[in-house]
Image 1: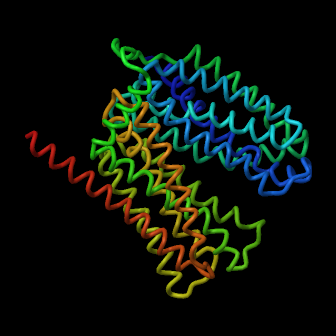
Image 2: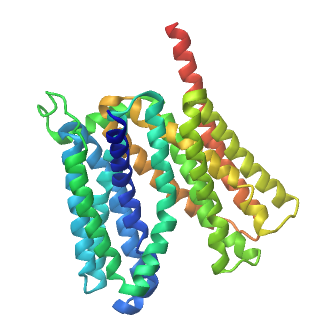
Length: 401
């Protein structure tokens, strides 16, 4: 590929992957007013978000094997079309029930971009370049949520809450054309349609379940995600105990996603020089060091907001180093099942992330001590999975020699 076409392809893939996260978060500022607008309680309003997340995570299990069987582009175009239709119906919604149904349809469609985009990175790139592309995607995914909430809030104030969904409808149309014209298709094996698609899907997941390396990659990825979600759920409570109000909480939380972007940027430069295994070790070490420093300060009685947020810059940077090569290992271990592998990884990330956020509420958080121990335990599980993974890889290389 020539350089301009190479850059356009990466930008196309990044946009397809980021669209689902954009659709998930852009309407969050509007949710505060939906209860009054539709005459409903806040619990019912939250279903618009929960419905999106469930559909977004669950449909990945279907799209992954289907993209292996029928081709990447077909499934991606179908998903974009459903996401665009859901966005349009949301903009036209006259009551909360219709809005919730539209958000579920939107999430079901946007799931295709996440799983197919990751699989296409595996299809189209090789070696360290594959990890670099995944790092670019990680940088975009770190930027999307804060930018989306800013844009969504401004559109809500100036043009009304429907403007967010009108924007998403237009973007879906642009992405459909970009995918149709700019992305190559993954060719399914010649015998892919000789069995029923449900049997084929079950076979794909059974093969993945029998691959210890894949399971360890997924465990590493999901426990890393759980650590971050625990931070997101617990940090506002801890910061509140330190006297930080709603207006200031975001500035402290944003330090970790910004450091994550820096870590992804470093990955694009380091992966060629020192290799993926070393980059992963650096990332895991940085993550554990950041949590350890935060916990040490809390145990020493340093109860200030910066004692929580500053050490966790190392956590964000570490995750930026760790996640891209882990994602590549997840979808690249069994290339013929890249779509199914991306689906499992995406679903487990969300499930374990939800678990990490839930367990935060099981203990009090008058300071950062309990949050620190919880994050350290989750990150230690990730480190154990990585150690077992890399030990097995080294043993296999030694046996081959």
